[in-house]
Image (cartoon, rainbow, N blue to C red; front, side, top):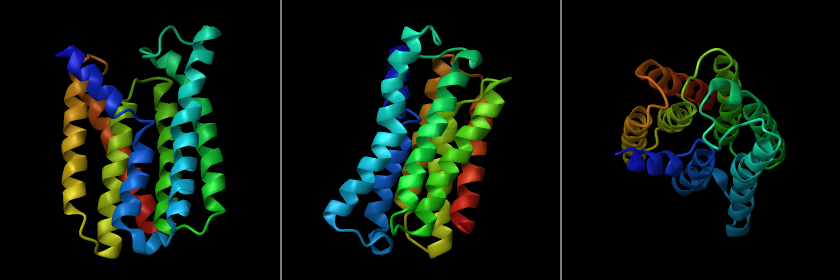
Length: 201
């Protein structure tokens, strides 16, 4: 069971969620994006590079300088330094995306991701809140907010996000990476922040 939980944790890694979400938003909200195929590739590439590739490539550097003992970063203390740099990478990505003619709700989603990382970073300094659940909760909140704001029919995606969140929650508990309060708090924080930002931005 723990091997399956590990695979699920990697498949729904917090750093992958923004890229997955961007691809889905461009699929269901193509009218608002009004991008050519090349434009979609550019946006996806920026999101992928700044929210996944750069943070992921930095992990061996953290390990080399012994800032972390393993790529799992099992303790709260180990997660603080990498999350600071991840926050900076996300801010760089937002800076680039903000200069493009993208819909406001999507920029709100990216800004929400930055805020979520900041909140998780602060909480992580004294409590091991689940970053996995914060990411999937944020994605779920953004989808529901998009549906409410534009009366868009994205029920299947919302159901899929909720199902994925449930699976990830169980996986994190099976791995004993978090206890139930840390899982619930992560999902709730991510959901609330992303929902509000997509609604009002």
